[in-house]
Length: 378
Image (cartoon, rainbow, N blue to C red):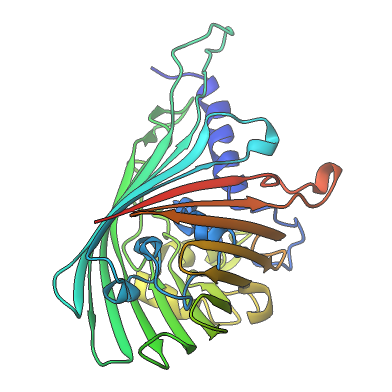
């Protein structure tokens, strides 16, 4: 059945999806916008990273690296662990049913390798449709999820590698639009990650470095119009960290991550067939074209920076702080974060808080966001 309200509902869904990553883009034509499908894959789901401005790539190994640099998992002390995370999303906008939840498990196979599995689920809340006469119709709950399987291994005493295979499913809206032959449906695709981690010393003191190529995979389509398939958020991230141990009980670690999307900018017009050329690009060519002056934004506009530090007392109590910065064309996210965690017996509990920023129309929609997480070691 065709409903006029489906168009309104689709706009709401698209708006929420864009807002969740702060894609508050300027309308100026000279800014090149990198827009992708399933942008929830760029959200850091864990509270440890959330307390350090989404910093994670080169920090000391943690079970939450299931959702990032999995190359570090083989360095964990515990043989196995299960974790869960929950993030209410856009809470400051009064939305109570939009959230990101995740869970994962890792198991060490021996002293130098392990496997891991994880699930992320993003709910866009409840949306009620109505027909052209204003009659309320059954509501729907758009949602997306990804499921990962991974393996990591120590290549040398200082260098490790992780590989992850990922299935992504996105159900935003289904059915036909008014006066249209396009039939909308759920989209799905396959992707994967490749990650590296370097440690200067075996006890993790000193310099660390991390590299992550994430969401390398196929395009995704939401309709029977197969010519217009959308890129998923392929990303390259490089991180540096440094750990200083004051004594046997106290240490301080700080680091920086730099991330960049590997997708071309979406054309604002179809002059000279720009949009046709955008959709016709292969996935591999799009990674390289994202760096070109024709298809991609300037380097200074495309980078996202995360700065953070973590104080550790006896591996039982942690304090964290961080800052995230991204250019207007990337999302204009600029905010501070705080976090803490404590471990009791074989359980660890994490919490992070996004400090409010801006005011009025410029108020950060993620202000007051709180992430919760728990890890249970075996």
